[in-house]
Image 1 (cartoon, one colour):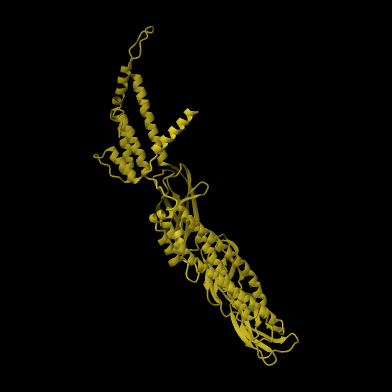
Image 2 (image 1 turned 45 degrees about the horizontal axis):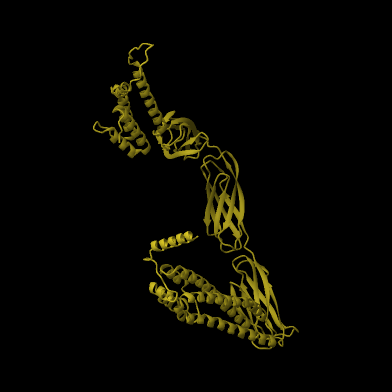
Length: 614
């Protein structure tokens, strides 16, 4: 046992000796606050926050965002930063609750002035939970501050005077609330001795259009049907008007106003607030409805018969009781839609029929969409007859049936017609399922031949594609036509890869054939000699020299470079090396240049004796 104790004591001494105290601050518990104040300016920070930014003398909290940003930048201990963040959250909650209490108190005072004691009592019931919430939040603030005081007692003399402002603010709100409650109790006692009043009101007409005259008439009296003469009533339509109306000697009153422009249901509030302590206040509601003006479309004339690509004209009038007619006329068919803006009842709308509409009778919807809310939309219909154009258009196209993907499609187009007309040629390259790949539109004339080019992406997959050529004549008397043909496109990258593989296969086959044609000295069948490694290595070294003859791999590489130079429009000279030409090709086309560089690297390895080419 003694041995074990001695070993433990020895380990403890070694660990204490190995521990370095050069970077560890040894702080006595009594001087902890002083050391922290020397490291970070805590007192100055608290003076800045509480005296200059956070709490005013009225107890109003502000600049919370600025204080949070300051705390993020100032190097203070992490524990203090966490406590201050919680403190700021509670301060924000306390400030918002006090603001809600102030708003409620203002509303209650306004209701008391109007004599609406019942609603004032309801708002008083809503204020009590807010006071409880503010008191609880203030207690949480004090708890957080007490925790800070235990570590930093010097800041207490800075913070406490400002926290007193918060307590004073809450106490002022409480005293104001108590005064309102006492005032309500006094009014309730006085109000019980007052005389009840009634308002009888009638509104005509109950259903009106925007801008129509509306009249309100009625009578103010007591519950015993005694008139209350020369008293003021407050009549209000929210969002429209507010007016004071005086009753005559028999208690009658009347008011006229214009109906709102927006359709909908409305309520007019009529309030009586007595100016003495004899009568009680009262109010009533009268309701009315505003409906939009009805509108209808009267077609004056329109184009009844027309050809494809001709313009349909519709003339008409919007009939309505409204003096303002603004909106959009929409002509809608199964093939096309047009919109025309109007700012008066008369309109002329037009719609151009598409070129591919078939012969027959069609229904055209004429729709009026009003821009103003006090008009109803309306709709009408017209029937038109579409005839087939009398003149035919013959279209012939010719193009190559096989292409490599780096070569554009060249289409020879010939058109013939009895009537001269401008043509809009739409050329499309699509897949066999109809998915569009590329298109081009050109303007030409009939009875002429054109040679047009259609570009497409170089990354097309090898396969069959469709070439569509649509000829749309400008003259509506000429019928449009369409030609569809097929085309087989080979992807250049795939073709180049296949060529490289074929070249490698040819080279390997040539090497095998030449190696097999070499004479091997005959050996007796019975005698078996070991394989001579050195002879085989010398034989392998001689293989590249056998390929070093004109008309082999170099000729194939030169032919490929000449083809690429002609296709990509690159000047090919004898002074350029294969690598320099490959770099120029890579600048024009990255994929083709990379493949060509790979071929050059293979050529150099085979041609120069399987050396590493960097």
